[in-house]
Length: 592
Ligand SMILES: Cc1ncc(C[n+]2csc(CCOP(=O)(O)OP(=O)(O)O)c2C)c(N)n1
Image (cartoon, rainbow, N blue to C red; front, side, top):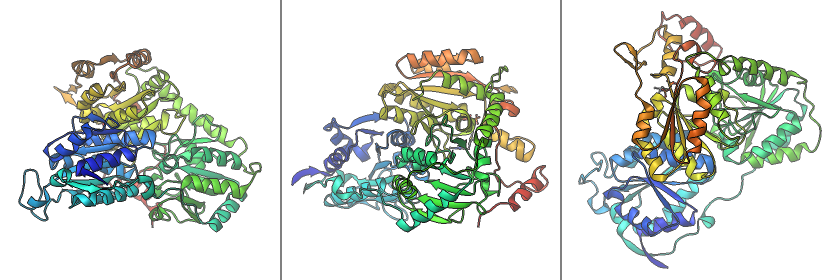
């Protein structure tokens, strides 16, 4: 037994759970917690300039390493500022622990500074209800050890996700004689295996398949299943296609890499998955963006394709497509069992040269924009030049807009956890703070934040966080003076555009992003010709500290974005040019 304050109990538990970093903004609501962290050199405190960023930092840290990082805020507005970050983590199933300060238990309901109390006292956490796996608001200091191990268990096991711990100020301060639980003894360890009979059925189906395809989602990377995934793909001769969050599950230069799928995916990915006879999906949700709004034959045709769905969360099984064989369990364990059930053998597929030929066609298509020498430079060319300046192991982070799709489609990802994106929630403002988190998790890696100007302008204050934490991330602002992805969608769907250009006196307007960076006293560059980009990024990365490269890219919608490769259903009103086309497409969608 030890006599500890609530905050000391929390700090001790975090240390035992292996937490090494904490990001947040202190306030009176967490004075006791931040004071207790002072005594724990094991946990490095990182300052951010907005609490949403604290959660994005922790999220980026987790995506880059598989290890949770703490995010903390004061009571009230500080806590509320995290909502978008928590939703982003929840949708993409990443483990983020958020600790917020809360009203003193003996004053609950009286309306203390920053309390929401009109419907229910200390009511802030209910705002988080749809975006956390669990939330807790302990009422006694003695409850803390219990709620801590329950929260940690929920966050890290099964399908990971964020948790909220809303800790009243008096509970942080109160002391008790406590035994701190060992996280190891309270967490569900091990990997749940899918039912053995189902594994046999799945293996038989795969062994007989002539056109098997593996669809890897973020769950394949989260479960550290990529080695087994490659082994199974090679055993079967099955191409691997990836979703946004699955990018990196397979080395994209591998002969069986079928690249990405969906509306801004690849022609090879969509062709292979739409013509598969058997699909094995691994940790993927089949959302509209990667399944081309479920329009039959564009990315998938299930049925007639038979689906084997390997998935840790039973709620995802059969949700978007009917399954031939459900494999409820951990991705790595399931793939290991499938490999064992198949035994040694040679691929029996009927692809022949087809995968290589689809790949050649796709590479030729990519070359049009990525190899373009046009002025202004295409964003695709800029992305190619940026990658050329980096090591193979570099981590690239994106958040929303054209850079997110461009990187999905054209950045050649070699290893898991080196492509980080807010895929499911597609959150503007994610890129820069998530990159700082990734760099903290992987100090030796090159980390690049590839932002649109709109994305950057939502969280550019975090250049200060990068400076304070001395994280040598390289932020690249791909500047097209506007929210051009949205403009492109408006043009395609409505035939005209609204409220998307940044203009002043009728001309495109951009701030001087390099000057902004210099104001934060970091290395800054401006590049506008293709030949300028690579050396600018190389110099920025070599500067050894945080840096920013402002890159001007073409705004013309014909070349601005990634190639459209699939289908996306966004309703438009009657009378618009694409109204009939939209209805015709919708009639072919499979979502019952
Ligand atoms: C927080 C948030 N607000 C709005 C959106 C809708 N949205 C998606 S992309 C985008 C524009 C992104 O602009 P920018 O970062 O400049 O990239 P661009 O598409 O112009 O290249 C917007 C407004 C979003 N995804 N997230």
